[in-house]
Length: 375
Image 1: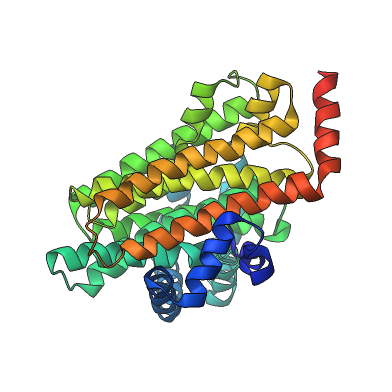
Image 2: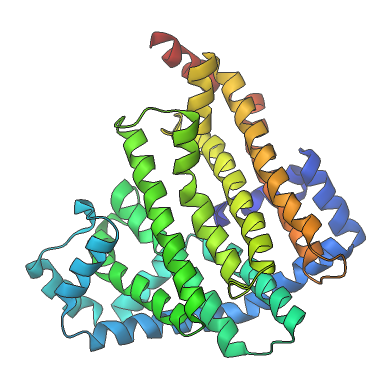
């Protein structure tokens, strides 16, 4: 989901889905779920500017203090698996460093990669998860909270410039700048997370490596080096579950049993949203993403409309697993109603885009089916 999807939560759109109607009713009667969600949404909004400032200052300090930026860049490329499209030459790096040592230029680029609003939507979730953990053990450490939340938000934000570079569909004039900034984003994320606890950094690194593996499998499926099978597609979904699942685990400082409960909830909710993204992408791009569940199911059944319906059902199975995490939380845990409301928004997102496709874009389904019939 992105901030660009805000309009799907307007009244007229909420009323078009079963989950949306539950959200509307919850807001109408101001029940526990709605009030809890609004509480963390409002709190995170107040904290957001502070996060942005820490992000800017941290990146600026790392760039200014780096005596060997080319080595920093090479280390980053090696860590992410040697992707040529993300590399810059020593000559390019020299001029980019000069440009981005200017705070006005650097802060503009950071603002641009935060402009997706995905971070704004994720912030209240992390805030609530950490709050739930802190309350359960009587922890009152704001510095610890900021470090663990900032670190994971910044790491997640790294996907934004990397995707723009690889997709070449946005901010074309700034893509070289992003190539220079990327290593410092990962460095800052690790710096923040390492200031919490060793087991938190260890879990982050493990999750980051898993996410890279998911991306690699995704790429090999896209380029047909791997066959589009159920198992391979599930493996590629590491790119969703490892990122948010690991972050969820670390919002409890990787302390069991809450770390496992948070992981299940966040990992499975992320995979559920992944299905919704694939349905929405089909409408926006006028094509079926490769690889994706709609493509897998459509190929298997030779029926595009059925393929998308099965994708919606697959998303429900992911969300059903995520909901198991809620059952493991104590009923009196303050953040439980927040998470119940959050999962309703995820469900509405997927239902909304599926309904849009089958009721308003039947022309696309017909086009997709014709393309499939030619194969």
